[in-house]
Length: 437
Image (tube, rainbow, N blue to C red; front, side, top):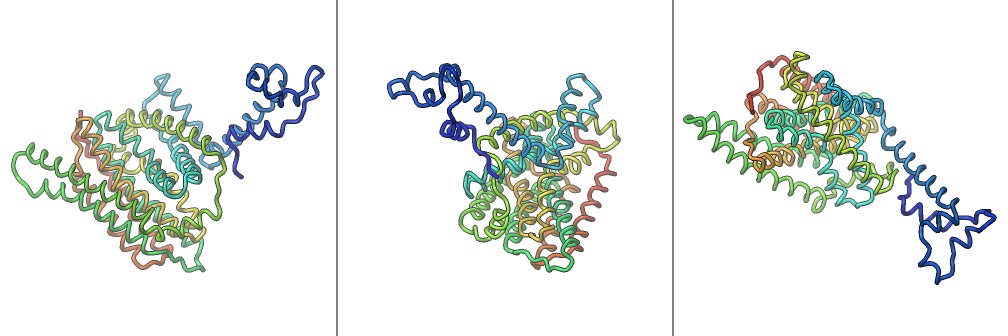
């Protein structure tokens, strides 16, 4: 059930206000003064002559805020993790152990990332399909983008690369694999079918992104000579490739929202039949801004304490960046994709998982390269041999898995186990990160 905005509540309240039984004056006289006195009616006069109206207005606003609070904060099962947000702030204020700050910030980011996705969807109901699609494409991975920007500000380029790479792996193997697994188990007696056209488009775009990652890596291994000259040429190649990736992503968005919208219409119609906006536009926008600011604060804690947590727990920064951070950032995609798979709506599950991976690969990563360029930081698309090999394997396996247009739980098992193997690989990898200072 949709809630009115504060302005709508105030207008409804003025039209429906009943006369108050005051011995000195009536609200009827106050609410409808002669035309010549309407311009002289101020808020203080209204407060003095009809306090009941003002009190009722405040109560209505309080009820609206309480209803929004219930939907936004307590409308998710992850709400039990919200206490970690103030605890992280308190831990930082009193200078408690940095690993504790990292752990609490990571826990606090989990529900915030999921709620940002929810609020973005609420705003999309009011802005229409085109603007809503662009908004979802921009804010769908807000947590990863914020962490990347803050890590770049602290010159932690490898943390940026690994966390974004991990987000792609998480979406394609963990999120999609879990969805196919649980969806197949929940629909054992039903044939699970999805539209191949959407998966094919995302696979092609991801393969283009993979080429842009492979070329700097092959460029470094193919050329011999002075290290600095190779690094400079590699950086120039990466920036040129980033331009191509951003152009490809713009074409992908235009393809999705304009020319070939019919590829994605079926999943949107199914989703819109069951869901409607539950809060007003401005309420959703206000909550979105507030939660984005809180995510920025916690992300700053995470970036600042990641090395301390790694040393304290005996876990490499690579494992934390590739596995733990993306799991937190993809909490919304993970939950939503599994829910739709349970309902045998695989088109939506594929759109969520592969759409998010495509956005990270073709938009967030090249955008980070350009932001680093503006900040005077040298960030290229060379993600090293092991990381790039895992990315190539993931994209190829996912493309093969989705090629026939049908699904069963065994496909989910294979993708999920692939993710476990990659996680184990980076868990035992103890190679320290290069000092970037």
